[in-house]
Length: 350
Image (cartoon, rainbow, N blue to C red; front, side, top):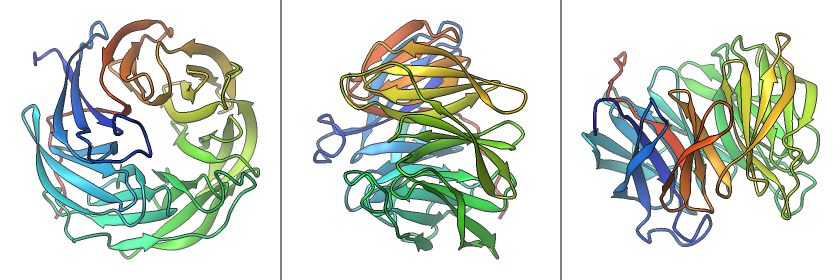
């Protein structure tokens, strides 16, 4: 890899797709992004691990959520262009689908979708697991009106409250953003940060630059909701369609990213990235709907000014310019997560 390339780590599902048998050779891929042109090159699988649907990186340690019924999280050392397996531990539930490192890099939070649980994995100073499993596991109770998707809690995403006092969990099954308070180095349940309209199905969220607003994707009702955020609680102030593009199948918003003063939302089956302008008052204005060249934009990240999209069903990545035009594609099976790489190792307080 030349010095001008930006490394990308790509999580994947089994080749046959999410929910199919794991351990059929799927794993983590690496792709090079040219920051000058957005070109993608040298896509190669670097390690096998079962259904690594989401990734997180702390310096030279890469973590993968192995999305399977007996949920696990694996840690790998980044050695040059390769990954060397370090350890695998239980995730604290079934089908882990999202990982988040705490701000100090000493805890890895895991959203376990099917069990609806939050797993709390302590890390040592070198980035390894400091226990054989979660230090804490938090369950939940409740349901929503969608009998197929909201029969029970479904933890889908973990976020840090902008003020730093809380850990938040988007629960697609109960239409809530759950809240956990930090107390003496541990988490304690602290109620609901926001209750969303029934049938919203909150999936991923992000915050405004000043932390005064949260932007929440509603997977089930195809919305983006704006919450005024204060002291760890959100109040609904705006609801907008996630896309106006119609689709033969049910449209399914997925990931959301704030990039400066714009908000990007991926919508599966409609196969677009919707762009919103973020106004000075924190509210949103629809700007454009940019088609992706493949199917099911499950996840994406803005890297070096380019938006790199994981197109799960069509088996490939796509690079979009800021104006929404497609500048590059690359083939790889069932991509589910895009994670920019780094060679820098943070200093962690012991």
